[in-house]
Length: 367
Image (cartoon, rainbow, N blue to C red; front, side, top):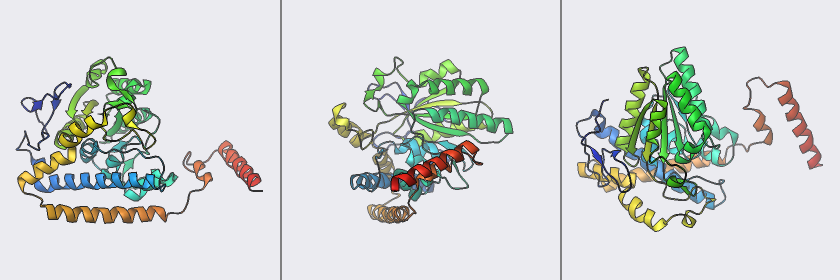
């Protein structure tokens, strides 16, 4: 779907012009697109509520000691859901540790995601009919995997694309540059999606980069670059959809920079108040830039969803999330030997030897 940036951009404070369709007040600056169908927009909003409810539930579970350290994505729902919605089921998704809204949108059930945060190996398994890689904790490593997978699909003649998510901190890693270089040279069908939330843990973007934007780095690798309002799910969806269409036509990769924020700390092991003004985050972003508030305003103006209907929707979503949590908590507990199960399809002798050595060591400790 072709859509021109001209005339529908808006300059945000301290930011270069961003591609924007839905203003913070919920006013749509681009009507007339078939994707703005009522059913599709309501499905977007339902998934945003679904992911927000999961995120808030997970934070409570971490405080209760029922899951491990947790990375909240609150505030980045438009980036993750808008991006993943543009994929086909057969396309590849490469997430980080913060992209559970994206993998949920692409088909991963919540009980698997709960298992991941409980430290269970099976939490990284995706449905048989989806190509979702395990969340990457090492910064930027998944970018090389996305390029390799896309290159393989290109060589095989498969019509698939690889969408890889990463944060602004990843752009300071060597893997970022290696991935973009290879993608540019081999013209792989890779969509690089940077969620620029302003901080690499506690380091603000202006202290990690001399370049003013991440988008401008696309020039060095001779690929398309896009800069989008990451709290505008319409703009994100259209930008990723356009990039995917170009990739399927053999026109190579695209680097997308979505300017957004994370409302909370880097993880539950972090305290954001030590390095940023949380009151400013609350005042500007939560009240004016919250992607859910923005889409809700648009839907209310259309008269598509009443408060009663939304309350019923939320109640049903919470019930489903509780059911998924119950499934995860009743799942068989993992054993330490499971670390050997997902390394090779056919286990080589030296891995078998290591597994046996660990079993003998654990047996001695029990005695």
